[in-house]
Length: 258
Image 1 (cartoon, helix red, strand yellow):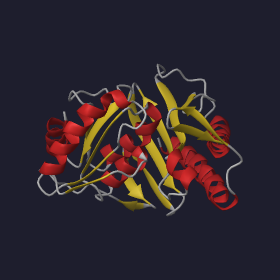
Image 2: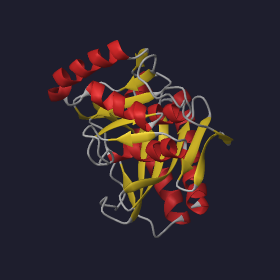
Image 3: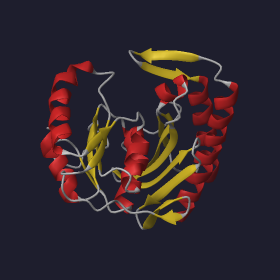
Image 4: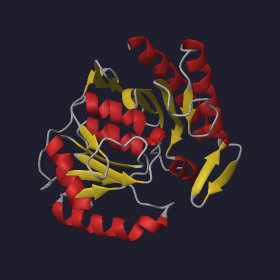
């Protein structure tokens, strides 16, 4: 697994260098993929860099990536799952909350993750059989078990507004039950910040596998727990996730917001 992690780390750091340059020089173009959903020249450049490095280092492992350059279908026994720029809307507007997310999926579950925040130079790594780390130093979740006083993160349903009424109801319940809620706009970082104990939990609807894959592997390695909104394990392809510092916290948060 270490060889895969090394390749994923090289790819994430190279994409991070592209993001840092683009932060200074600007991106060549921005296009709308859909309502409130954008892609930039920088997304494409980052994905191309990640794809090239992973293809060279791990030629037998296919790639599933947000901007569609990979060949994986998501049904393979092992594949990389990549978001070259998680937090594109933040990036476009100059809000410094975005990252590169590179995950490895094995048998339908997140096995390894690398998430790199180029703005703050924070590299999160971890997964099956390997510790969760931040810039090489071990990290653990907060260990919190109860919602009372918990500091949690979420993501608003800004693309699929059919879910808004249900979300607002759950948000209100969570606001009353916890010690504070933040919405940062990059799910991979929300999961890593939960792994590092900065947040105690996180929930969001409308996510894709590349939003979750790397952060989920890192969070599990740090002692955290994840489910889908029904309490099952389909958070990777089921498009919704509840994460907690502990199983008890994740369960309490799920019951609160659903």
